[in-house]
Length: 55
Image (cartoon, rainbow, N blue to C red; front, side):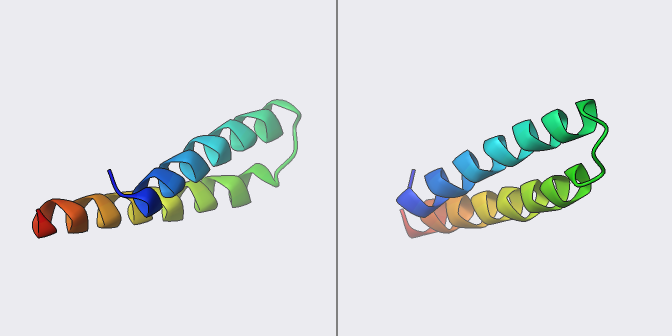
């Protein structure tokens, strides 16, 4: 797995964890974390698919 895909996956997992913590605490800032998780998930798919195509 390329390094950028791995970084995007880590950011996605951390953003999901932050969103869960925010919503459990009753903070609506968790919506921003959900959006960040979506963007980083798309980046992970893109870099993973790009690496498979190059191989």
